[in-house]
Amino acid sequence: MLRFRTLLVRLALLGAAATLPSPVHAAGLAKFQGQGQFRLAFSTAQPPLINQNGAAFEGFATELLSLIGKQMKVNTLTWRKVATPQSLMDGLRSGSYDAVIDSQLPQPLSDVSLSKPLACGGGVILARPGGPTYENELKGKRIAVVSGSSYFYYVRNLSFNKQVNVFANDDQALLAFLTGTMDALVMDRYAALKMFKKAGAKVIQVSPLLWSQDITLVMDRDGGAAQADNNEVLGPFNIVLKKMLADGSYAALSKKYFGQDVHCEP
Picture 1 (cartoon, one colour):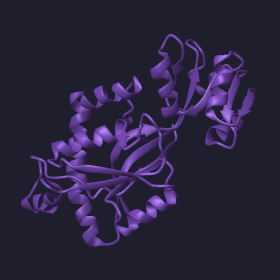
Picture 2: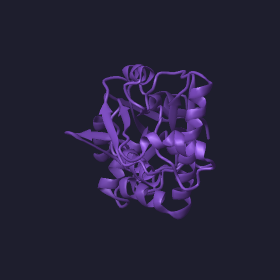
Picture 3: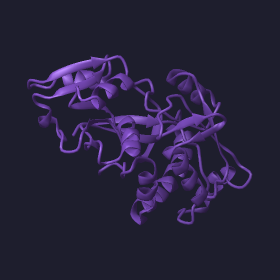
Picture 4: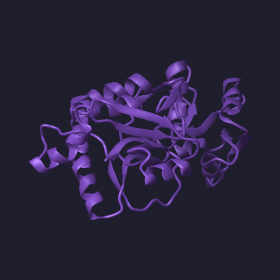
């Protein structure tokens, strides 16, 4: 399975955990504890991964970061929605916020530090129960895709015969599927899981990932001192994330939002 990198950006976040290896780390992270504030931003709304609903910010990513923050004794996380991925990066570089999360960041990114993946996105097949689950099972099928998307190019380039049907947006493609004129949709994992959560397993099924995009915390880095600060944050952050994966709390949160576990396979 191909692995791509999607970046959720700059986290100068989060307080000290009990597992911190030295007082130096505690001092570096203490500014985010107590009355400290960690500022986050995003651009691409992608419910139920992340979304703005009025003045509230909600979704799997926001709750996961809040839980990790509390374990690291960081109680206050604030969110802001920014107009475009490029302006999101510009704000990150200028220090308007401490971290961002987005699946559409301009590439390539340089001078950044990455955490372990928080979740995995990518392309999936949405079909009726018993329908196509793997790429080779799309042979001869009527497949709906959105025009100009990465899913369109993926389906178009499959080497076997298939019927590719192009729609202007996800809603039109879904309508064609629900009325029975399409056998399957190839689409974003989280958009498919949103539908799955509403309709249930008796109506639709969502395949394993056709390809994977790591959703990762990324910190801005422009020098040795910044790299050291990043390490003070990302080391403890990764420890808490690993703990949540091991004790089942990550899986429980994931199933609450998506109906399945969305962690990345090693």
